[in-house]
Length: 283
Ligand code: NAD
Image (cartoon, rainbow, N blue to C red; front, side, top):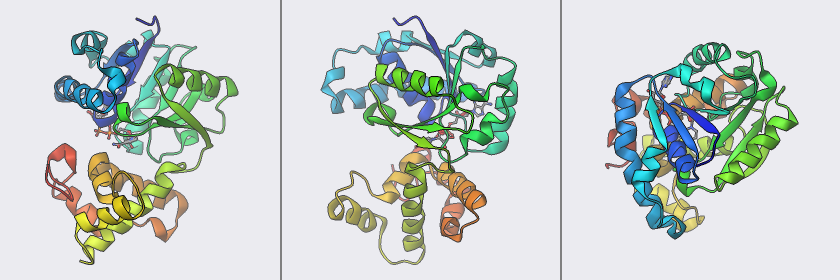
């Protein structure tokens, strides 16, 4: 077991994937969520996520679920971040929630900890403004599902130091991830591009141009992508996609990011994609 403890805040889609990835690579993990139900769901889903990862990545065959679960402490206690040398935050893509958490974290984090933010679109510099140690704040945009995706986007905020970037890059290599380093703009590289595809695909459904399956087929068979934009939106969570588009729109003030009304309607109706069992597809 590696000595350094890693705190993962938020135990939803991304937090539980990151906790699993860390535990698979022998880190001791504190998975912190403010909802008991989310912690229970994470406990329930992590074994399934590991089974899927083992099927796709034969190198993981030896990994035993009991050992992995033993490495993860599930807790509601945010003060536990004091024990961690690295904090990876994954709470919802909502500025007010993030702001309130970061004001709280400022009084709790150790002076030597790195604070890695797994946001889809919120600028890292904006979040770093809530903390008195902005040099140690950095974006770590993981891809979903975490164990299956090899790359992480490291985002350099205005104040992020080179030492913070180097520490994060090294740390990511220890959990089997390659990284690219990008500058801080809303949506960074991955989501500034992908959300345009997902949003426009939703407009195609709204305009009744084609079915979801056919739109996605153009991407998988036509462009050679592993998944189409609508299956990707369902995987991410339509609530997260809508929040991200709103952040992109508000930051750039560019109409190309205006959120498709159908996406909003689906979220209002509780159709959030895979996590609710229904989105552009049924699960
Ligand atoms: P999610 O809604 O599945 O999970 C968020 C979790 O955070 C929930 O379990 C919630 O109970 C918990 N939470 C809320 N407030 C909290 C607080 N103050 N303290 C502790 N826990 C709290 O969201 P997600 O899809 O995992 O996304 C998390 C972040 O990762 C977002 O910023 C999102 O944009 C980003 N992201 C998502 C994806 C994706 O594919 N879903 C990919 C990359 C990045």
